[in-house]
Image 1 (cartoon, one colour):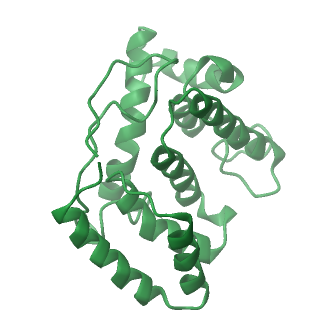
Image 2 (cartoon, helix red, strand yellow):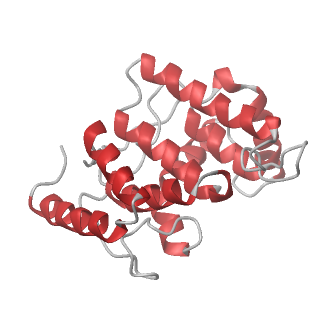
Length: 215
């Protein structure tokens, strides 16, 4: 899927400012499928995060704020308290720029028992859901949203869930989305310790994407 860049406003769909790759490519730094090792690998980080940052920079331009400024940092503090005014990508990036008052971690990424972090993550999901009700969030974009958050804070999830999202995110980046049945089968194989079988199936998917990219 190749999305056409469009100007950002809070009422428009998010995660569409930059075009997506139409194929899965190896990461230039870690050699895994690009996006697999988000956020630890710098190149995988850019492959995923750039989609969110593009929305954030459009928001800053709309508000006449400069990146890396005191005004940007102040805006990041305010945005999580104005969830009804902003797109979910804007909330996501604001959360990366502030710390949780309760646990001191990146907001949304604290321990699983931190209620403030859980509430912040719930807010951004709620905003995304509301946008989806207006037809502004595709199922693939929802999956990207969840996958990014899970991999950004892996200590909040099980090892099997992390493995499943690491394998899926590079393919989601192209616009692909598995069926419910396929996703359940993949998770069952991962839980049974058959990760190599899942990897081989996804490598075949990559070849299919090269010959017939998602539409």
